[in-house]
Structures are given as structure tokens and as C-alpha cells.
Length: 262
Image (tube, rainbow, N blue to C red; front, top):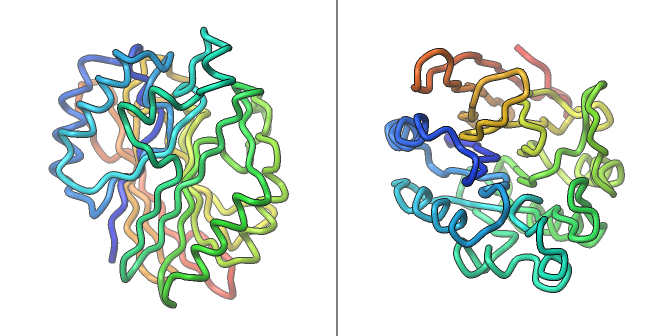
């Protein structure tokens, strides 16, 4: 069994300072096999905010995999966003915008969905999806295949933000090439459910780990317990007190290529 802690949208520059130490302590106490960050480490992609994010990551005691979010490119400097959108991210967080982690139980592939020309909505190209599918095909048999990206591949009814460009084609391709799970953030709302158009792919959404900008739910993150064709997702949230506790648990099993809650 592998334990993947999935967190998103920390937004350094607009964080709840009372949750910083409890979040670090909780992650280190849970001791997952890997921490997966699905973007938006910063609020405005300023160097000081990336420094704060890098310090946060350095205090975690396990491997960390990170992809950028739209807030990790400058919104208030269009020239820099168009010409060198990831300069500060590469300098202070990681040169690799699409990292991968593969061991004998999971294959976790990072995807950069940031669109410098449409700052909010994001995009995912056919070339990117081919890379993800090739990575899954190259991993030895028996592994659970996870893709991680900032922008979700599907929105619930009522979500005002525009679905990222290429999402529908990506869902179809990922469903065919053996993806089991997609981790994402961006909406500041947590959710776990099979994709409507590809029920063999489980979409796991994290809310915001630290941001003070909440959308009708508490700060939270997910802890995934992954076994072949079985996944348990524990959601940790900070409710009335500045501490993270389990607030919801969901279990899914895959039968005949379809995820169902059990």
C-alpha cells in the first residue's frame, strides 16, 4: 500500500498564519510515502512568496512532487508572464515543471496545465496527454497510475470558472490509456468522484491548504491509501481550532474498469 498526501493552493502571500505550523506538523506526523502539491504555491508569484513556499517544502520530511498553478505565474507583470512565466518558480522551487515519481506500486506523473495567455483557465494539450500515457505504459505492470495537474478535468454544475482548454479530449485519452486517478486543485473545493465521461478515472480534488480565501469549506488536504484497484481518501480539515483532523472518509473499489464507492 502507498500513502499519497495530496495538497493544493497554499497561496503564500495570503495564508492563515495560525495554520502554518499545524499543517507542517500534521504532514510530518502522518508520514506519507510522498506529498503531491497540485499548484498555486503563491498568491502573486513574487519572489518573497516563493521563498516562503520553498521554506515550507524544505521542512517536510518525505519526498515531494510539485506542479505549478496559474497563481505561480505573475498576474501583475504581463510581460514577464508571457516571456518568462516560470522564471521565479524554476529559480526558487524546481526546474522541473512536470516531475514524475514511479516506484513498485504507483506511477505519479505531473502535468503543467498553466496557460500564460489565459491566466485563469489553463490548458492541456494532446502532446502532454501522450507524454502521460507513455509514462503509464512504460511503468511496470501492477502499478496504480496517477496524474497530477492544477486545473481539474471536470467541473460540478454551478462552477463559474471556465473548464480548461483540452479537458474533454484529455478525459477520453486518459480513460483509454490506463489512468486510475487524477489529482487537482484550483477551485478551492474538495471532492472525490469518478469522472462522468471516464468512470475508470477517479478525480480527487483538494481545496486550499492554507489560503484565507475560502469557498464555503474549511482549509483541507487529502490522504490517499492506494492499493491495487482500491483507494481510501481521508480528508483532513481545520475546523473551529487551528489543527487538522479527519473530517471525511471515502472508499472506492474498481470493478470491470469502473470506480464505485463502497
